[in-house]
Length: 199
Image 1 (cartoon, rainbow, N blue to C red):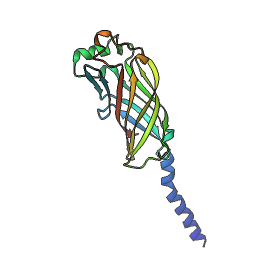
Image 2: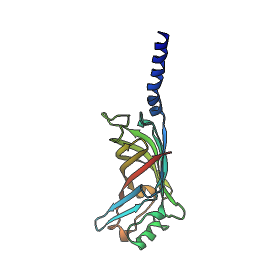
Image 3: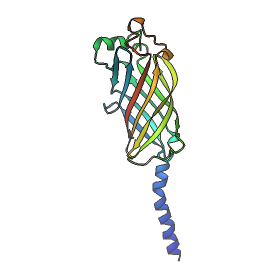
Image 4: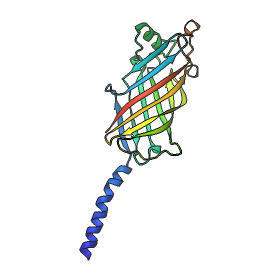
């Protein structure tokens, strides 16, 4: 009888180990390896401009059993954005726009993960989970709160985040010169596709 109780106790410990490990938060890193990117789209009356970078870096802490506890920070060098036009890139990075010399990075910091009424706080492996992320976006040295909508996919060793949010240039003290006002939208759509790996 004692032997059976001991075996039962050991078995209970054994089966509980995976649950404990899943409850722990894991740190995932975005390593600037070219597999993560950030994109902005300016859809103005006379021109649509797209800028991209695959130099995004950062980290996030995720508990797969409760993604509402997720925290994280990401950044991308202003000088890494490319629009397909060298002169336009130079203007974008210059004093009148993002001012890469004074403010070399754009940043995003997660403040809160919001789930819908039917949303699950638990990630399911290899399945997309819809999320709404509130965070602090910093560009041109000015920080504003934004809300990004997207999905999170978890495979155990990796997490992929795909999300979009609008950015108002005026809110970041970036003024569009009148000469290009019909070619540059004041509100741009920013999207991210981030692949983070467990440390």
